[in-house]
Image 1 (cartoon, rainbow, N blue to C red):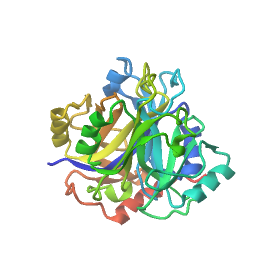
Image 2 (cartoon, one colour):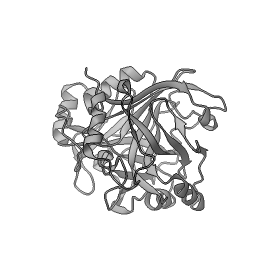
Image 3 (cartoon, rainbow, N blue to C red):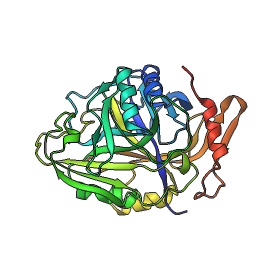
Image 4 (cartoon, rainbow, N blue to C red):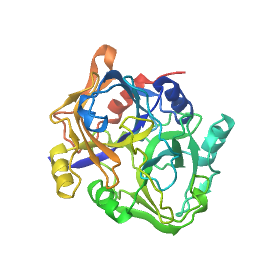
Amino acid sequence: MEKIICGIQQMGIGVPNVQEIWKWYRKFLGINVRIFEEAAEAPLMTKYTGGIVQSRTATLALSMEGGGGFEIWQYTSRNTEKPKFEIQLGDFGLYSCRIKSRDVKETFDYFKKNGATLLSDVVKTPNGKLHFFAKDPNGNIFNVVEGNEWFSNTNHPSKCGAVAGTLIGVSDIEKSLTLYKDILGYSQVEYDETGVFDDLKGLPQGDKKVRRVLLSHPSLRKGPFARLLGPTQIELIQSLERTDCKKIFENRFWGDWGFIHLCFDIQGMEALKKECSEKGFPFTVDSDNSFDMGEAAGRFSYIEDPDGTWIEFVETHKVPIMKKFGWYINLKNRDPKKHLPNWMLRTMGLNKIKD
């Protein structure tokens, strides 16, 4: 089977208290549909958890507006460690999560009225699109951007959809393009600009000279969940002035406080494994034939970008719709390029949490 990148499945977020922060995500971002919630050990991740099997609880949540979801991840065997330094623009790793909005100004007003911490006004990107930056109560930075593709309209008051990409700090954009442009398919350059940017000045060290490249994928993604996950963009930022850039997860474990991984929903894991290896990004973790999270099953793997940022791939085999009735979507024998019918995807919305 050939490699198919179906979209960003989720952004992994390490948190000290899942239920507390998820309530904030429901209120401000509308990410209110629970796909699974499970407590278990993570034996396959010991490479990144100090060589010890750690216990955790993980919740996969999404919005029926469309976009990638969140995997909200909390250690239960140890404390969730914060970085020992303030994360600044240009540091290496997942710096900010892009969230799409139907109306950026309305979303900004909703955030302001409801007491969210705002890091900028509504400002324009180098290609003239409206966006702003805000922080969640744990200090994670979200970049609210103009959305143009939607799965359904939930009438959430914030006007938000879900994950529409990410902003990643890198040490060398040219080196990083092999992964993000060639392997992951973000081959269209929306802009490639160098300078000091007004729209970044609200961020720590946002007044320094950087190169920033915004990448998109030129055609709509294929695969079972592609319609729900929607189109995404990745912005790479390289600091040209700072000499003290650090890895965001320096001296910490995968699963600790912050954006822990960017996860892609894929089909054709073996073909992807071969390509990643040939291009210098070998799998560092591979569940091989299948993993079972109780309510979902599939195969997952990890690679690292040139700066050690964790990229996860998940080939989904089974996903729950209504656990109490034993309803699941089984993907094993379907055409991997075909979209699931909209009605089938909409059934996942039956797991909406109401506050």
